[in-house]
Amino acid sequence: MPSMSTPQVAVTRQWPITLAFRRRVNTRRLAGWPAVCLFLLLLFSALAVHAELDIEVQIEGVQDELLANVRAYLTIEQQRKDPTLNESRLRRYHQKAVAEIADALAPFGYYQPNTVASLSEANGRWLAHYDIQVGPPVRVTAVNITLKGAGENDPDFQRLVKDFPLHAGAVLDQRNYKTGKESFQRLANENGYFGFQFLTHQLRIDPVANTAEVILDMDTGPRYQFGEVRFNQRVLRDDFIQRFPRFKPGAPYRVSELLELQSALFDSNYFGNVEIEPREELAEGLQVPIEVNLTPRRRHRYTVGVGYGTDTGARGRLGWENRRVNDRGHRFRVDYQLSEINDSLSTRYSWPIRNPGSDEIALTTSWSDDHPNDSHSETFQVGLSRTLARHSGWLETLYLKYLTESFRIGADRGDSVLLIPGITYSRVTADLRTYPSRGLRLAVDLRGADSSLLSDHEFIQLRTQVKVVTTLDSRHRFLARGDVGTTFLDPIRSLPTSVRFFAGGSQSVRGYGYNDLGPRDAQGTVVGGEHLLVGSLEYEYRFTEKWSGALFFDKGNAINSWQEHLKEGAGFGGRWLSPVGPIRFDLAWAISEPGTPVLLHINVGPDL
Image (cartoon, rainbow, N blue to C red; front, top):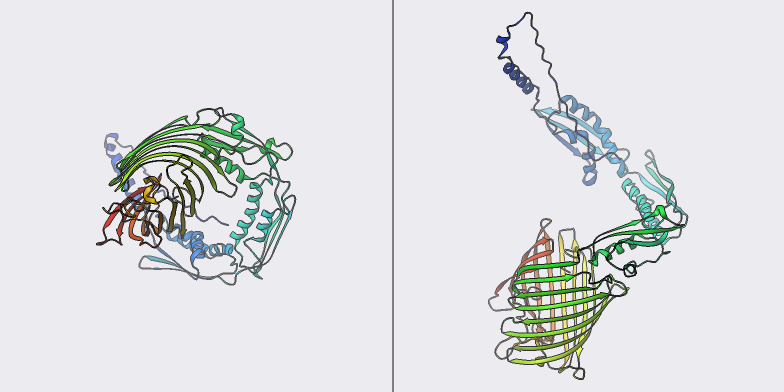
């Protein structure tokens, strides 16, 4: 297919200048001649410049992609703004136009177009007009695809045969033929059929009969396998890093497995650069050795951050992480965070198990001083957890937490000791974690405590959180989220603040302050509820690559009975896509409150 753009040709005219002298001239009288010559050169150059032709190209009879391709093929369209274009070249380009239009329509199956072309000039304005009748399209009469070799019965190849983009009766589109043909070669490369070849690849077109036949005869050759994986690095033990590949030597070769390995190594934070190179030239039999070149990250990482959120007020963070405590991949992290409503200090020591890309055991400690509004809670916690990635895509986390808490909220005061076992299942799927166009986050958490197991209270608590993101036509983005929780056994007012439910804020029901929704005591203080029910719908329109606007509606509350009234909030906001995820500015109205007060919410971070 001809190129979609035509190179511009610049024409430069040269004006000869001849000076003849019949007699010897006094050199002193020629002293002013350089200036005169320069003046004459400038004058002749100005005379040599032609006024740019005023040209309009009108095309009728075709639309959309046909029109776009015709304009791309037409030399007269590509060159009409060339300042050096003259009438002679213009007429020459016009004479080529009918043939160029035929070439532009052929890839779409139109081989017998009839074009009426005219070129006229009036009052210094040129009009090139082309009235196109595309004629009857070429239709595919047969698609004959055959496979030989080891991949003859491969389900992936059979799927491509079944879904080939051209079929009998369809209008011929040569782009679909090219796409379908390339899909076989791409699949062969991705699945280890390195000897793949086309024995026959023909698109037989009869432009008189307006028919076409597709003939593809392919030999896949043998399928190669994974060989030994060699890691070039010196910071981790070889027996540990060999646990990263999900495949074993002798398994069928798949590029997707190598991409998963690359992602797992990079996401582990041990390495700053991961290069994977299949060494086909070193294959032994059908086994291809894999060479992985790894550049380690710095062992120590320090973080300093400041920010602001309407839920937390001004906030700051200090952190230190040792990414490689030893050559078995152990990690250690310390974080200190402070804000207007909370101060916290936490440590985390973790070590990989089984699949080091996702499975680990972690020992955590934390201290937190939470003081929003008229309440106060100080907690100290020690925890042990084990996380495993299940084949279904879920992350399973078993945990055990020992917690001591001193709390005051309204008229409720107390000191509590709880040993809390629990289990969490979570799953996140997204095309891009920071700003997904499509994605899902789902988490289910079940935890509890019993007075016979080092606890002074009994409770069972179940909480489910879900968030869905979908996009239509690249600019229209929809987000929906839900948060449901419930508590059993002991009365909620006897439990410490950390296990009560609250609602309100930028991540809950907007239009209300952080944790301002829930059952209240006689003094009007929010004391938290047994259940939680929150839902949200949001529409986002993307104006530019970085900026978008949003409309939203939230509804929910922390409640003691499922029949209690839910609060509503609605508003609009702006989104700026920063490197760490969207920064959201939301102006929300508390619809359920007298006077419908308005509140500004600011939030930073990824959607999922």
